Length: 306
Image (cartoon, rainbow, N blue to C red; front, top):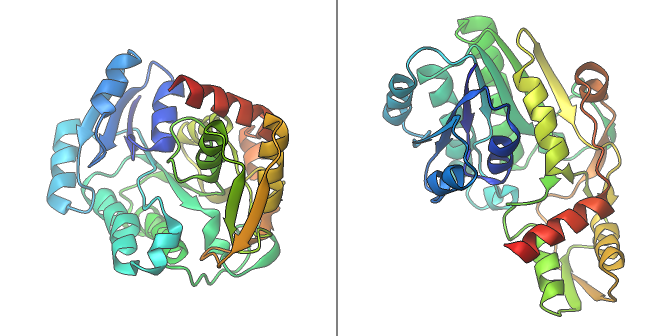
């Protein structure tokens, strides 16, 4: 099966390449982040071909399509602005990275089956339980561009017919090896390893995070990539969100250290909702199995060895 993975040089992308079936012929698309060729070589990923492409450029994506040749069987679209908070200061930049790039890809290099990794951020402003049937009207630019991209995918499938099937997966987040250093798990684990014991949390720390270990996340994405014939939108979350304050306390407890915390300022993305959608578990057999404590230990071991 010929599969295109965009955003392959990112956090999730690295882990997808490591866990994807070896009989998949993968075109790993990246743009400005260096090191993907070396990563592929180091891990002997002989089924992976790195391809550099600026997805915001229609000409570049057209060249990508020519390099791939025939229409791909599937595409896992991971490319995106990786910093939702920054979208509030740079909305046009966010729109170009999240939506314009995706439209270029759907126009110039569509696949038979497309899995678009959207975000639980589309529920921005809501409280309590949510599902894909919940009416949404996000105000955060990142969430707006993600929602627009979902709708463009539906258009290319249901109106234009260049995509045969799709899954819009509203992903609530992951942590684990290769995540950006700014992520709270890696940032604080590295700080704790340096001996730091005093930390600052933006906002009051009661906003929620619903994330899972990246291995669980990737297994879910791979299941969706195989799910040809589907036309649906699903949530992908652990279903048990926790507050920032609780995450920090668990990190300290797991590592057996005492810390002090100070709260200050505000956060752009304040989450007070949780997903009640069980489609990923019930229909695709994808449910997080790695506990946060175990996942932290795995990440801590990875960082120590890096």
